[in-house]
Length: 337
Image 1 (tube, helix red, strand yellow):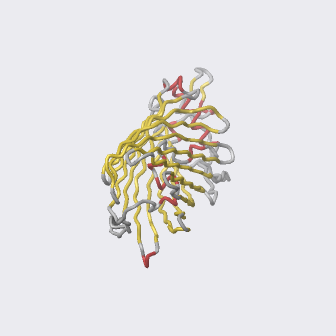
Image 2 (cartoon, helix red, strand yellow):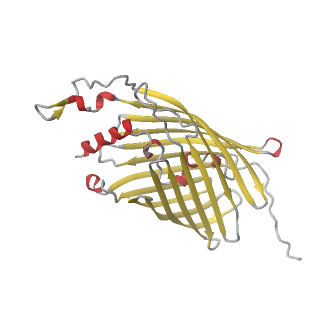
Image 3 (cartoon, helix red, strand yellow):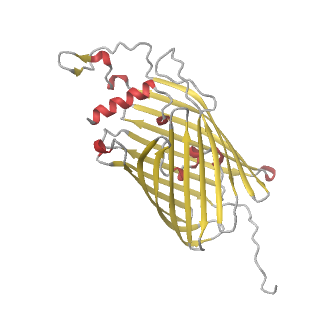
């Protein structure tokens, strides 16, 4: 049964380019800044940052999904203009036979409108997709005598290519403002703006539709030691949608202008506007000086839960921030007044 599900998956991949599986699907999307929104390039306090993410999903179905990303970004200040540059590499494997590699450089410009922080980003890049056709069965390979598929038979699929590549273009905007103990953040990212053609078969004009992603974060500083962080991400294309939302409770041990030491944990929910809940997500992690480490586990609620025994995905994220060399203004009250 598990192998049967995997064959269905590859049929979808080959024939439905608008499916949501085209893009990275991290549960801890807030710890994968450049894949979430190009405007997040350089959106942190520091001179440079390195990050990495790993996700293993539905391991019981022949390692159906494995995703790894790594990259970094930096801040530059030519003539006091806040510019940032970055690069992220993404490697996504499905069933061990379909692989997607993305090389995505990005740039961002940061400025203020009064008390509102504004970040604008752009992300051109190269996408390479590879498929091992010999590892899958096609209708023409059905042996009608035995009732089984025989991969030694020709599949009669014409004009097939084991690999193809295309240029991709993404952009985004992110704004935030502090209101006392509340700090809302709103972001909009546009992916596949150029709607590139993608197909493993020559001559097919399958275009990847644009995907829009809206994220809303709300940070509530209950006290110096307790922070509630709410997250919500909604993405959609013409035929699919995905919605992840939840909350983390963070306890802060110490903080200064550059570093924070804290622990956090919470729960998130994944669903779509036209479908029931797919998974519940348990999250946990910590900040220690320049490091942020996050873990999450997805518990499958969808119809696939029977085949995967309700198991979902394990995810790990790591971020390192380099201390800023810029001087930050800090107002210190004088006791005389």
